[in-house]
Structure formats: C-alpha cells, structure tokens
Amino acid sequence: MYETLLTSLKENILTITINRPTKLNAVNRQVMHELGLVVEEVYNDPSVRSVLLTGAGDKAFVAGADISEFMGLSVEDGKAVARTGQELFMKIERSPKPIVAAVNGFALGGGCELAMACHFRVASENARFGQPEVNLGLIPGYGGTQRLVQLIGKGRALEMMLTGNMITAGVALQYGLVNAVVKSEELIANARALLVTINSKAPRALSMCIEAANAVFDESSNGYEAELNSFGACFGTKDMQEGTAAFLEKRKPLFTGN
Ligand code: COA
Image (cartoon, helix red, strand yellow):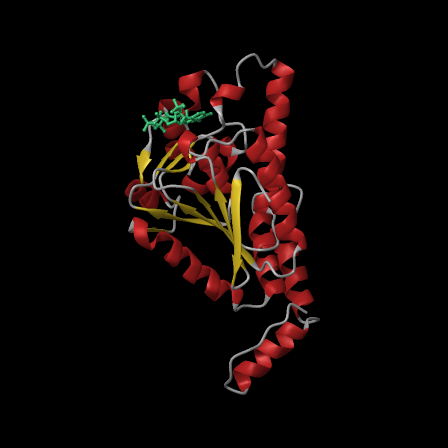
C-alpha cells in the first residue's frame, strides 16, 4: 500500500516501519506524504488502538530529512518544508491514540524530531541521537528546537544543537529523552509489551491524558482547566462506570471506548 513504509496491524497495535534502509531511512517527500496518510489512518481506523513507530534495518531509526532534496530551495521553499514537517509532527503529537517510537539506531535531525513528536521513546543500545543541522548551515525545522528544550532542558538542548554532536542511548536515558534502553533484539518486543498494557486501558482516558500533557506546552490552553474538564467528562463515559465497577467487583475491566 505504501512505497516507503511497512505497516502491520496485530493486537490493535499498528507497527509503522520507515523503509528506506539504504538511505538510513532518511525522510524524503514521499516518506513525509506517506506518513501523513498513515497518521490519518491512525486517527480514523477504529481497529488501531496504538502505534509503534520504528525504522527498517538495524542501523537507523531515521538519519534525518533527505539532504539531497534541500539543494536549490528558496527561502520560501524552506519555510514551506518546515511548515509541512511541523504540521505533520504536531499531528503525531496530538494523536488521540498513543504513538511510541522504538529507536533502533541513528535518530538524527528530522529523525530525532520525529522520535520527539511521539508520546514517548524506547531505544536500543546502539541508538544515537543528534541535531546535526548546524553542520549543514541549517537548524532543526520540524519542531526540534521546541521539543528538545521541552524534553531535556535548554542547556542540554542547546549543547546538542550548537555542537551537532550525537549522544549515546545511555546519555539519552540520563537526559530523559528516552524512557528505557534495551538490547537491540529486545526493542520491538519491549515496546509492544508497553503498548499491550496501554491497549488494555480505557481509550478515551488515554487520549485525555495525551491532550492534558500537551496542554502544558500550549500557551493557548489552560492545562488545569483542560484537566478538570476531561476529568469531568470521564464521569459521562461507560468505560469509567465499567472501570470503577470492575475494581469494586474484583474483576478485570473490559473497556469499549465508550
Ligand atoms: N539524507 C540523505 N541521505 C542520507 C542521509 C540523509 N539525512 N543520511 C544518510 N544518507 C545516505 C547516505 O548518503 C548514504 O547513501 P549512499 O550509499 O547512496 O551514498 C547512505 O544513506 C548510508 O549513509 P553513510 O553516510 O554511508 O553511512 P555511515 O555509516 O558512514 O554514516 C551517518 C552514518 C548517520 C553518520 C551519516 O549518514 C550522516 O551523517 N547522515 C546525515 C545526518 C544528518 O545530517 N541529518 C540531518 C539532516 S537535516
């Protein structure tokens, strides 16, 4: 169905694999376009409850935007490229269904930005993170200047952006950029296990958690107000009735997303 992505749906988890291993899964226009389509699918397909995003091969998650497409672009073209990337990555960040990045090697430039747009990240021991755009006379353009500061703090973020140096998976863990570092061969199973746990929870509560967490960084919304409105809205759901009843009846809840 897609030329640059592999997708597979199992146990309501959609695995999306960016599949240009000979180019270290660099994100070209086609990948961008197809990521946009697959994100629409995530929003609209009720059989998708959560997403695992990774890269093909054992060397890279995504080694950045495809540098070969940057030659000859004008100032306006550059802005348009950034706008397209920012809008797509924001759509990933605002997905009502959890999206977890399984970072299996280089996550550089747009690859680090893509991983940061996901709701959280797990990494393999060989993962490397970096924002090396300054080596090209560029800056991160798909939300990276904002999300890196949000996730690891300004000093560490600026060191990464200004030096262009890569950090190891261990340093990324220490910085809080990733939640866990696991052996390469265990990465997908580890991420899937987290998503199986997540998929057993009430879907609307999950999307409200994501929305409230995003509100922290959204100047146009009051996070506490968003939280209390969502908390209240939970009381109008069948899943909240089911969850509380199941607890009191000492049984497992069966959530339907209603
Ligand atoms: N855009 C386009 N092509 C890329 C790419 C990118 N961001 N990253 C890697 N590739 C391509 C290489 O050009 C090479 O293609 P080729 O075999 O047709 O020449 C192939 O992927 C393999 O990469 P290579 O550089 O040979 O692998 P390596 O192991 O020697 O180095 C990296 C790996 C990640 C250190 C190196 O590829 C790199 O620095 N990539 C660019 C990272 C970057 O600046 N990203 C931000 C972009 S804004």
